[in-house]
Length: 274
Image 1 (cartoon, helix red, strand yellow):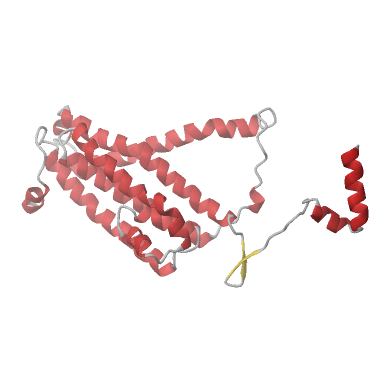
Image 2 (cartoon, rainbow, N blue to C red; image 1 turned 90 degrees about the horizontal axis):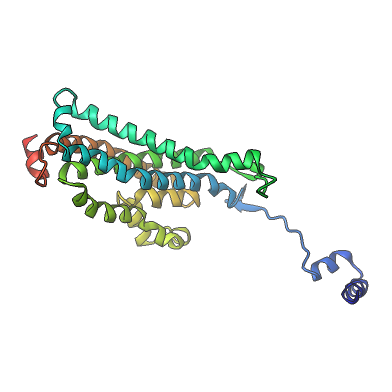
C-alpha cells in the first residue's frame, strides 16, 4: 500500500502520464534501422544466412568422419579392390558422397523432428513461445550467396576428405590430419568480432581468401552485410573451381590408394603417373 501511494504521488507531481511512464522505466521503443538510406530489417536479416551457416557446420561435423571412414574402412578390409574391378572410381566416389550427404540430411531431420513435433502439438504444455515469422526479413541476393557458399564449401571439403582417405592407410592415421583440418575450417569463429567490426583487416582478408577458412568467413561477412558483391563472386568462384579441381585429383588418388593398404600413398608419384 505504501509503495502504491508513493508511485501515485510521484505520477501526480509529474503531471504527464508519458513522463511518468518514462520515469518508471516503462518505455516502449520502436526502432527503424537504415543502411545507405534504405530501411532494413537489422538483425532479422542475418537470421537466414546464419541458419545456413549452422547447417554447414552440422553437415561438416556430422559427415566428415563418416566420409573418411566410408573410404578407409573398405580400403582396410580390401573390399574396394573387388568393387573397383566392376565400378569406375569416379562413380564409386560420387556415389559415396551422395550417400553420405543423404545420411547427414536424414540425421539433421531426425534431430529437428522432436523440436518441430513439440512446437506443433505440445507448445502450450511445454510453454514454448510462439514463433513469429512476420518479422523475419530474407534478402534474396544474400540468401543466394549463402547457398552458393554452402555448396561450394561442401564440394571442396568432401574432395579434400576423399584425397586424405586415399592417401592414408588407416583411419587412425587419417584422424591425425582430420582434427587440424576441421579446426582450420572453423577458426574464423574465434575472430567473429573482428570480422563484423573491421572486415578490411589483414586477418579477415586472409581468412576470406584462404580456401579452408573461406566458407565460414564469407558466410559470416555475407550475413552481416560486409561481403561486397565483387568479393562474393571471387570467393564463390574460388570454392567451386578448387572443388572441381580437387575432386578429380582425389578420385585419381583413390584409384591407386585403394590398393595401397599398408603404406601411405605418395601423391606426387600418382599424379606424375597420370
